[in-house]
Amino acid sequence: MTMNNDEASQIRKHIHNVRNPLNSIALHAELGNMLLKGQASNQELQNAFSVILQQCRECDRELGKIRSLAAPESP
Image (cartoon, rainbow, N blue to C red; front, side, top):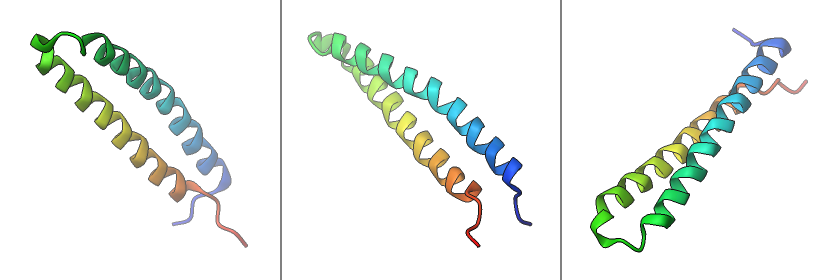
């Protein structure tokens, strides 16, 4: 089954809409991580923030794969 241009455009739009909150999550997690670096007793929180960042990057990679599938075929 081949995807038409409208379907591909919609998928790209949804991917863009998902990336915005992912970027915000990553930004805030990085900020939290920076704030906690000076407090060794918060190591577990630092690790949690690192995992959040890692998972955001993984989501971004997966969305990139979906976007490449949605790209219209070249003639």
